[in-house]
Length: 238
Length: 268
Image (cartoon, rainbow over all chains, first blue to last red; front, top):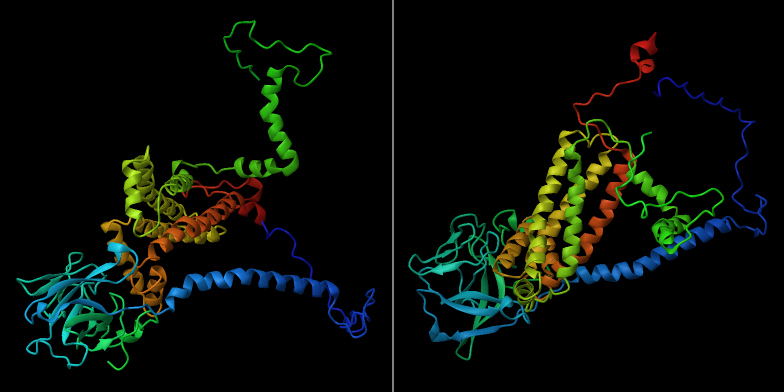
């Protein structure tokens, strides 16, 4: 019922002579007891600001380290050591051999992952040969949402059980929801043994990119919408 | 006022009425026992004045037409309390390390007295809470209870809904079996599909680019400390606003304005 109450009357505007003179910025002019010459900040105001600042500093002293502690792993590059997966003659060019590598140390079985390995096959592999792809190592993380794919020898396809993603022999998408070919690992040969190193992602032309999460497309604008992260980088100049 | 009939107990056991001139207050130990609870509450209230707040919270005016749908908010809160209590007791046996989490859950389910029951309460209770919070939200929406001046309470409620979802997500990993592991891999990767910030968000959730040794303890800390604390604080503020602003009448109840304040009478 605000409409029923009388409207508040507006005070008459004062003339210049009637207005209070503006307060002096100096505490000594305002007659404050114990004021110093040239002092403009009252002691009440000084203690107030000092107290608030001390509170912010004290809170920051535990908040900043705690936040850094929680956010630190986002900026820390993951160590991806080279791991031996077998002798050269264990891998052919026509089919994949499953090998187990450690992707997270110190947590036993939960840190293991399967990798499919074969020798470079010039009749199906179109990418440029270099020191890191004499052997092709394909990750089992589906590029839809990360479930484990399985290689089916009879159909020469990688098939994901979760949402029906299907990849061909070189890991390119041939069906289902995945947005890019299966990730790969750098491989290298030393002393008659195949070693598997850091992971990298590939676009539909099988060009190497720093590892992305499943679900992040790499063709067109995708590589900018889903940027590379500090936690995992591809090897320089590859 | 009619008197409540005396209980049918033998006359010798019924209290004798006070005689004039008798000293007031409890005399015998039995009388002290009767007065004990009241005097303890009085002692606390004299020092805290909490009874005023309790009266303000509990003896509120409620509009005509208040019905069973208005209990959904309390039901959600009791689901949360049930989750909090069962969760605290599960934590007595649970071990949030990647190598021992699964074994500790198996131990809870197979060996601990009532372990499977308490674990089951927590597991099914989480679904109950999600269902109840959505029903409470639907009640608020369909009864128009989100309108002025209760918008802020709607916003807090939405934050509570999101936090409840976050609780469900972080809790799902903790049994650390195949289902929870792969479901969390998929869930984190769904978070990662957000453009620009998604990749960093999923790195934050996993504490690195892959599920590792600290992912489980990170989910556990969020599930066990951070999220319940925030939910508890927001429920407190939500309840304060409910008591402060009152509940709304159902939309089919029409308010009857006093005769003197009717528009047509006022205008003439």
